[in-house]
Image 1 (tube, one colour):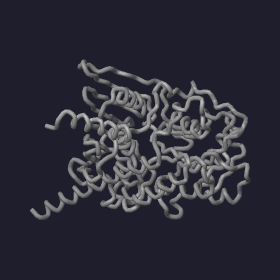
Image 2: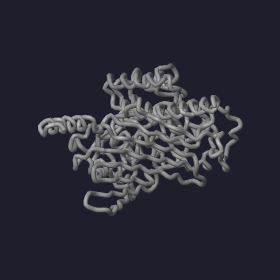
Image 3: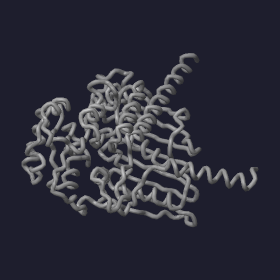
Length: 435
């Protein structure tokens, strides 16, 4: 055993390393519901460009996402959407028409629609220069350095220094393009532009409550355990079932829980990732209520029904994630557990009605915490705008919790899980063939 002085020195070094690698956090009491927020005061317009006229930007019956709605509530009459970029001109015009029939007409009555960002730049006047560009286009069209799939680089070239909000995952290209995402990240960092990526679960009050307790008690996370069970019956989009188009459910959907795992566990030793999957052709992988015709998808591109992965964090902690395409109906079943010495945190149903269970030292009972009216979508937009506006009265209140570089590392983890599971499948098939 090492002498006491050596052990003390090692502990100090470990704590300093942990402090340096901790993710940014926000006091959960500062995350207020949208209906309690006050419009940012000011007489100047706040110009915004929306890239993408789909559900993530303007909402749908499928979920709570709707970025335009949050911008409207944060900025009030100051909001001016100077351009909507989407190659589907008719769809873009239709959503603008609906907006102009409501009380937020002033934000959209002068919005112009363009097929590309380049078209907007060619036709804009100096007064149209945006203060923020919100990117909600499909992930297969961003996150790379390739023309037509490099919207981030285009924005920085056309509008140096303008803030960006990028939806997640940052890309869904083939695994060979991972390095391109990191090149985009470096370009953003080198530019000094403000950039936030839409991992909204980091902004949940429940998540920040866990962060607060960990930091106040100087805890070291020992393990994270994440589970994401999809209600597949409600997924009628063929592309989602095609790995060649969506990159698969872990990359496209499980990304949120891989990101939360990293948020608490720290950096992952990517080489340690191990995974297994239940494939569509195996007996246990049969699904009885699919709404799509999977026979139209090439067999090699059909998604797995279950993917289960484990890994080591650089801190020595252990992480695990299981994604299941198994439930019917509409409601998903999602949970995240975080363990530290004496503590268990269990986050249940984070997408709809988050409940946080906490077991503390000295008790075998779980505390239960509920967070009514919490809106992480609003919190991520609100914090971004406060950072852009450089609110100085209370600098601790505005923090971006997910940078592009951080999002790249989550993207890297999800691809490592998919790759490891596919290698496991191949190894199993090789063994059977050799038997």
